[in-house]
Image 1 (cartoon, rainbow, N blue to C red):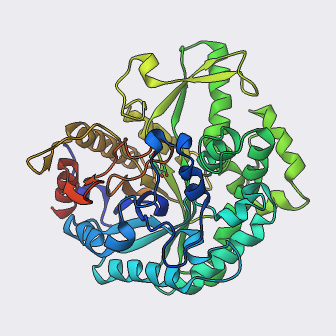
Image 2 (tube, rainbow, N blue to C red):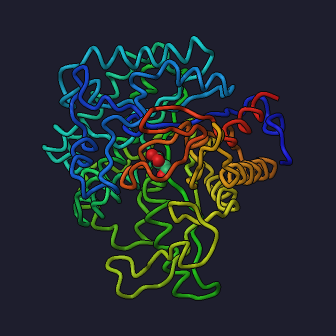
Length: 446
Ligand code: NOJ
């Protein structure tokens, strides 16, 4: 390892990230309403091994000892999300006081231990009641979401300073409304483009609402962002295919936020989004965030695929390319995070970048109470080194959050892919700090 935390500057935010549905459990307790992930994962065929998040890491009951573990690891910043249906069971209307109290306790526990809470407002668990009315495909979601943001500010805004509006909108719209492999399992271009436009509107509106309350809030939103390259170098059709995939996966939600509109020129099919746009929407898509959250795990290689509908492009997954990869079949390619940072920095209107997620799933083994996760450790070290390299070259990157604190419910993949710094035995809920967790802790302690 060739770096220390001092190399990144004293104002650099080191942290760890989680999300409500992936860790909390208590899916129907204390007045919580159902979310789309509750209903989606009850249908066994939707999730690998028939897993669901009913119990997950039982964080709902163990938050105090788990936050104490964050403290023990000396991690100063904790990013987590609020479950919308835990605080507003039907998505709109009546507030669930037990849900509010729970998050106030989580936040207060952090603050009492000197851990800064970073709240994501929406990490994919839309209330089921809103889904029944069309969810993200219904323009009404703009009002539902605004009310929800106001509610979060009302109850948590006195103690939370750092906010992120959405988590990876491309993933929840693409996987949830186009491919149907994530909740709510909808498919098709029309659902996808409607959800996309409404989420992009909410992304900016959420920022505006937060800003209107408190000028001191630090406001951001997060994006999945991978380095994307043509499979065959200097192959013109692959290069064109890569531009399209990049427009879809990396630019679709980011550029309208930056006032550039949707990347319609590089992916013509997106022009159909215009039928969901009303007069004046274009301006409302833009908002000046204090920071952009980069969530990077891998790079994608793209080849021209004439038969692929809409895109004529295909991502060639890592094992087919015979390159080192994680349990998610994502290539291990640390330069990807460097390239992503450089690329984000090239947008003049991005003020500051934080890596709000980076991490890896590998097979772990508990032996004598130890988990020697060398591959994850190397992955983290190599990626953090690339962040430093980018920073040294002038990229304004001001934070790094590991995905994730502890092994948890990895959406459609269930509990099999483990990303945690802390191992969880899901049968007993026993926590074991992995070697990667000990190393991260040392980095932050020195
Ligand atoms: C992105 C998502 O925000 C998070 O929920 C997920 O677990 C990780 N990446 C790993 O796939």
